[in-house]
Length: 262
Image (cartoon, rainbow, N blue to C red; front, side, top):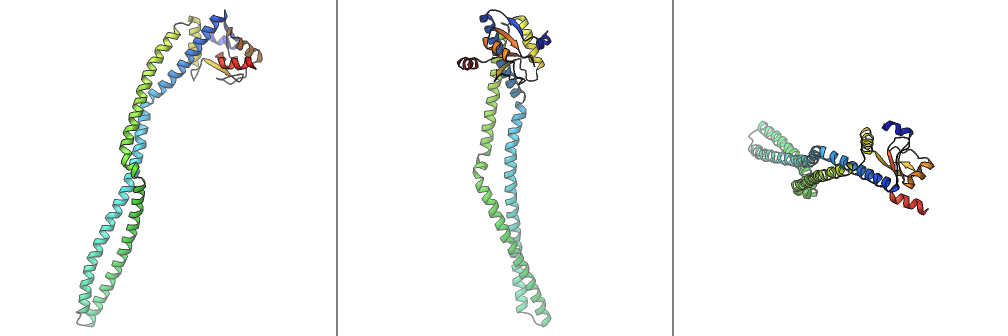
């Protein structure tokens, strides 16, 4: 039956107050259903969105741990280098003593070579220590800049999750209220009207059965309405459907008022 509306722009006529009342119910029903679809989507995807929040904070925590690990590694390397410097300086002192106490040319040359090698190694280690000190300073600077984030990360995560859980709980309560409201409105519709509304809503991907006319076009399919249809819609004495998508059409009261003023 609904398919015949494509070629039949009106399917309910009658006294103006009755038609207006039925149309107002349809509009209210559509707004309620649209809100229910939004709430249902929010509820169904709640777990996924909560996991996304947790993952976002975990990524922040991971990046911080990476920086801290880089600092710790640099500090450990610096400590190891300083230990090797200390050990080599001990060896250098011994080489210098051997150099001073050498008894012949061979002992002298051996001690000299050892002392020179140790001095070069100590210098290389000291250069590496300076490099590590610079690296540590740079990492510490980053950690200082992110100190507030680091200190508040756990608290911010808990607050974000608490706020999200509150929102989900609110959505569930609103869904129950809107579902009850929908039923109260739906049962007051004539059976034929209720059946038509359900068919239109179910066959539409967006669940839109009742569409507002905006700037002379159906807001659901964007088809421009014929001038005569626009005039008939403004009178409000019949319920009409879009000639393109067959959705029930209406013009918002404020739109009608502006049209009448102009």
